[in-house]
Amino acid sequence: MSSWDAVRELPLEIESYMLEPLEREVARDFVLRRTVVVLRGRGEEGRGEEVDYDPQAQRRFQEQGGKLPLAGDHTLESFSLLQAGQIEYRRWGIESAALDLALRQAGTTLAERLGREPQPVRFVVSTRVANVPRWRELYPELRFKLDADADWNDELLASLVAGSRVETVDFKGIYRAEFGSPPDAALYRRVAQAFPEAWLEDPALTPETSAALSAHADRITWDAAIHEWSDVEALPTRPRCLNCKPSRFGSVKRLLDFYDRCAEEGIALYGGGQYELGPGRGQIQLLASLFHPDAPNDVAPAVYNTSEPKPGLPESPLTIEPEAGFRA
Image 1 (cartoon, one colour):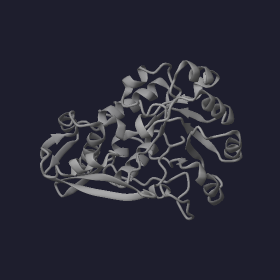
Image 2 (cartoon, helix red, strand yellow; image 1 turned 120 degrees about the vertical axis):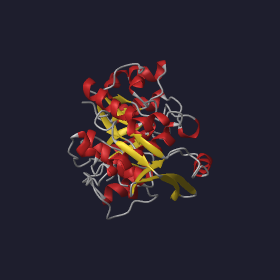
Image 3 (tube, helix red, strand yellow; image 1 turned 180 degrees about the horizontal axis):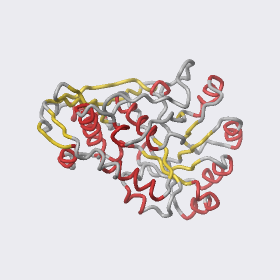
Image 4 (cartoon, helix red, strand yellow; image 1 turned 30 degrees about the vertical axis):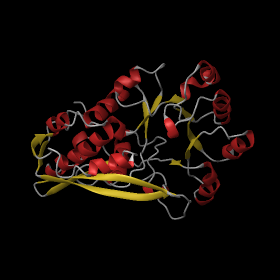
């Protein structure tokens, strides 16, 4: 039985819904806004999180409170089909809430339905380079995912290599606008040589950068381009490993089919987050615990998403204790 077959026929009764705004200052002068989708039925609540980074998109979504045609008797599959026109982040917020509600109405958990046992989740911390020494001082065993920058000179690279335990370096070559970085063959070559065991994520491939990474092609991994299995088939070469951000997939079916296909093809996975402020963080940690627990998962507890390192935080591996539904 496929993973989707294990949940697709779950009955889902929705009587009402509400949209709860969330916001948090995650860096100096940067307030992140999110929306929690709450579906209600038969005395239960299902919760999901919409993670669009555009505050205007979040505002427009929140203005639709009470106007969306969500109520009714469904199966998880029929409800998913009704959401096909939604943008991926919004669809994930709605469908993850539906999965949570359907499982709670059935009195079961996602782990039980899939026949999988949650495992402790190994995680890395995605942070600014300036914070690495302090994080390392507080948590000597902590591992990192870092965004490469053209300012990384040989001296800085040497300081990062010295015991920093960098597992993934993100080149941001697939992103656009302010989130992206241009191709830089010299930077790619320096990084690949400095971190001979790290995954090299989302390079912008040009003749020059491809040549710089030719000896390290088996360590190239992808994130921003991956929204379903067909995106893997479109890659220039078959990867050994991929970053899986559930909210990018939109539908629960698309995500579960992706997990199954990667397992069949022997492609390893590690999880990624989207600065979730609400239930979405626990959900991606739960998925990591079920499908790829012993990986450099970028799903650290949300308390790590602070501007300054602090003591007393949960350390890796993270023990996952699922609640009823799609929650951890």
